[in-house]
Image (cartoon, rainbow, N blue to C red):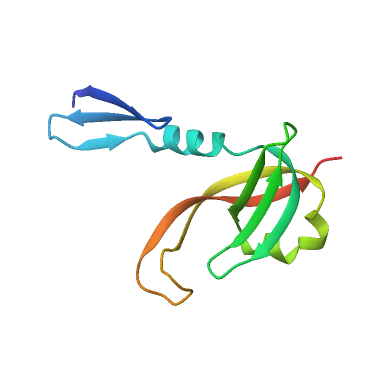
Length: 124
């Protein structure tokens, strides 16, 4: 089977490579997209707020350059550890997560995939 690179697309900082085979199947290199999505979020920052919301836990951060990040999606278990992380410098680990994409917390059958903080580790 021959694989031929058809094109390389780049939009808003995300690059996607599309390949086609002789059977016209299309493959997208999602690992590149995932790595670039998390690159816009800080790897180390100070936690300035943690809020337990309807569809997710939300975290506010400030990085070493004083740039603020507000309302980043986070796993619910991070909200449970608010006293541990609040006002602490942390290392952040991200991943993709599906969340409800409705106007309220009630299920509507729609979801979206977002970059979410999966875990945090206090930096000493």
